[in-house]
Length: 227
Image (tube, rainbow, N blue to C red; front, top):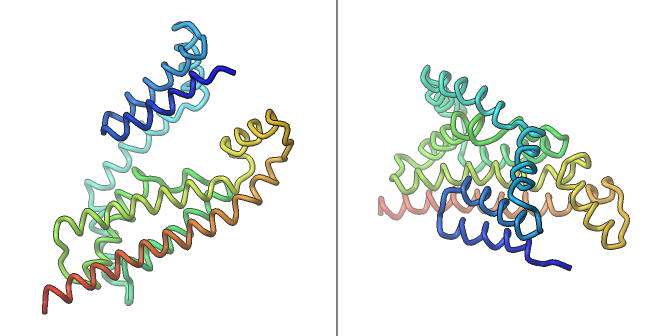
């Protein structure tokens, strides 16, 4: 068995660890994997082109980004903040835990593109989380504001990643099924999806705790500053 193609995984890890451009890292790892697998350069380019053409995610991006930019220009973030400021008892912890559950449930139903960083986190979730944190704890320092934004983005990632595997028609489930079948363990996509549910529940509990811990931490910093 040829293990050299697995070097592509190492290239991805090293590239991300060194903070190189993610697009260059992924493309470079894909090209290296193809070459190490014995494909000639033309076949590698053909495989990349076919994958790009089959998915066509870039066309969706070109549609979404101008719309989001136009909405932000006309005050979408400000309106999102104003909505949260007017909600009684709203906290950053409650907001992000609810969004985490929403993201996991919708991803489990196959609606994985209903959220996301460009269309949901940046224009809506992050500003609402900031507003909720300021409402509960007062004005935030710049590093605290960045922590809230990062937690909003991480919440979307966790919700999608651990929710989508419950949907048995997702590509990752089909990939896992193929790997198990080649190793002599025939499993149906539904069986794999069922066993993804405990993992999703654990992810919800663990990340929910991280969200509430950050919310409590912001409150403790405010109290220590006042003291």
